[in-house]
Length: 390
Image (tube, rainbow, N blue to C red; front, side, top):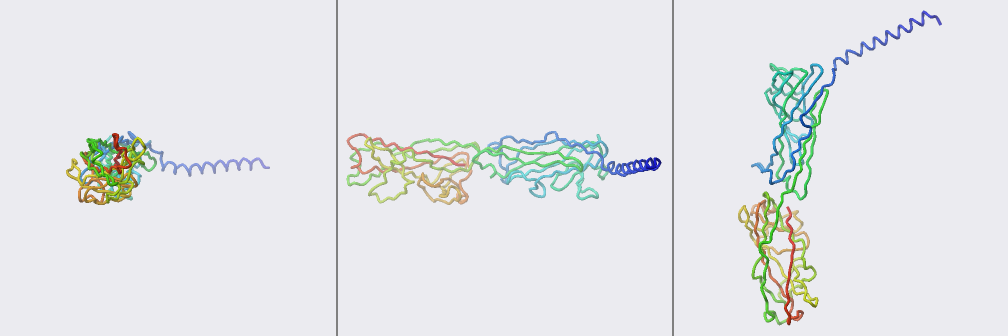
């Protein structure tokens, strides 16, 4: 091989590589180095929320506390500072937060390279839209620093992001605690930073107390029916339950269980028919016979902090409600629920109240006398457990 031709070939390769490098270099320079986006906090934590800590507004929305995040964008050379927030849109002005909640953003107090600037809305290029010291930051809209009515490039941009969130008051009608969490990102043309929101929603707390127990007094054997029928005995004193909640709550009563299950003796010869779930036991005699049974009637009205309320009940576990129109027999079987509401609310379930007092009347049916040892004292001892569901 000719040495001169070999040297010439090497020189040609060197020149080709040099030209390729020169062709690539202008493209990299035009793109510029990536910017750095930082937030004063990347996670907004609203903590524990409940009906007791959040008051409903006139629209039925619960407003969460205002939060503010500092935004800082730094670039090694002047860059387009237009910035947008990418998140799941709830509507044209806000973003999704829980199934029935939303949050909105507002950008304010812009500073570009040490000078205060206005903000302008950017929508597909051209002149900025609305211009002001602060602007709502809506889905699919970018905001950019503006000087003298024109979008301005820079190296260092700072601003404050105000975050307003709210949820429908139904979001806190919970039986168990739940965490709400959502995230989005603050983006420029060359960088982004994630921003997340979270809250721990807690169910409101209610307590139920027995203000007064049902009493029947003492019966003599001579008071009992001698014809083989049961003996009907009205209560000498009604029972009373009181519910206190830390915030207005819609709740319903459920009879969890008859604590004397298996001892109820259906009334005989009384012309009254009750389901097995409506009869509650009174225990057994020393010889093992059932003493009888009793039924409980929820009062037709109840006193509350919202005034007098009226019976509403459900037979399908709370899926649907209807007006009772009077007293209601307590039932410890199936999906029976009992509540109190205003007339206009009876189809939607119990009303939300802080306090409620309700009485329960009872009727006892003593078993036929021939099944009882009437020569000794018999203690009838009924016991029932109630549950409030909210």
